[in-house]
Length: 378
Ligand code: 2NL
Image 1 (tube, rainbow, N blue to C red):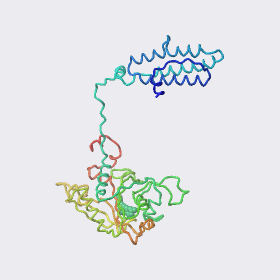
Image 2: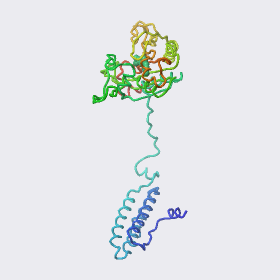
Image 3: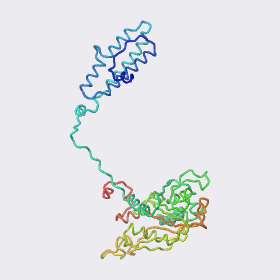
Image 4: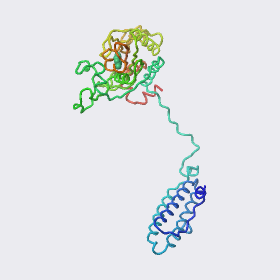
């Protein structure tokens, strides 16, 4: 309480009896603290003037009093030290007084030419990017089925991007991925070399290393491939992959799950169709087609041919299959014994689906950041 009372009371210059360096130091610090406190309490122009006068007035201002009491009043042997200290103090106090301004009161705003009666500036609310919106829609369909979302690094090792996904070293299947490699990795063992992930599957391996079966996960994210940009290619694009592992997961589970997901995404009228395919990490593998949601499966739009489905009435939306037992071998020690568990997986290109969904004819528009294009999705 004593301290409080001392702080609250207005500052007055004390007479000194002790002129040691330590005593002068303490007196100066108290004085600076008082000045700083008073500067912070100034609310308007009138208070600012009173504050300035109190500290700086030639006649009986605080600095003048300090000069009289601490310097002129000091014994001869202490004059030199007191002179240096008082000069320093004058500098600090002058700085504080000059920096002081009239708080946040309306007076000062008016003096700065700011009219506080004008309405504020409105920042327009941004719009969700069409690719991210599509991604969120797909993710939420699977979340409702009990899937969790997993994420992982974009810069990956050869091991997670290829080896653990059943691409043997030097196997030609790696060539189909047009990988962008990080430079200067030659001194490392092949499995440790860094690259930009070409799919989000590495995250599935990483998740299986951490979580024992059963699991159901979806992995949204950016991937990179060495594709020159054109209307349908971009060196950076987005994927969503999914994985379900349990005992007795069958191709029937895959078909039922994906048929439901396609109806949730494109409307309950769409039909699904699976065609045999190949991926290194699934066996058997398939491509999933849905009836064209532009022409409704007829292949025609009035008198014109339907372009998105090339008049076939079907659109390819994703690749899928039963997880190859060779993939489980890499995570066997965490409960994924291929003799005991089975699973299905799928992967889709989000950008391509967003192009179809919004009738956009050039993928580059998604990544150029032109506000005139993007604000159409607001
Ligand atoms: C496509 C095809 C696919 C997978 C991705 C996967 C992941 C693991 C194991 C097995 Cl860890 N498979 N992912 C499976 C089939 C297809 O993607 O066309 N993506 C754009």
